[in-house]
Length: 100
Image 1 (tube, helix red, strand yellow):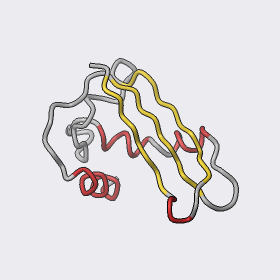
Image 2: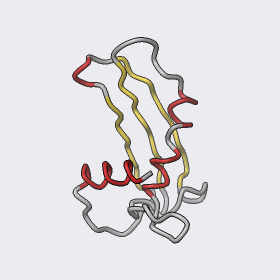
Image 3: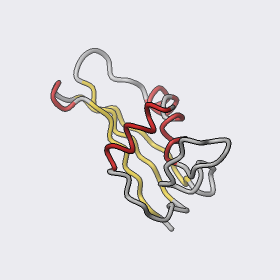
Image 4: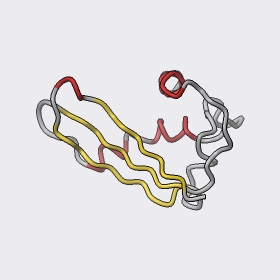
């Protein structure tokens, strides 16, 4: 989990803001070669990232405080799409839509 914490912190520049209390999260997984991952595989692997997005606690010391929690009252929806792309575009995009 430390690796995810570090990567997300680097990408965001770690700007301080109030955590989002209600949101929907969508994951776009860009793949160039082989079979596209299925949605359940993308979302199953998302748990560690989700733990880094929530508020820091004793139980979750790597939380960055982007969203308040990962419970259904906070995360109103979690969806994913596998997308075929070129090798230069490979990666993962996480879109958080604020409904607070």
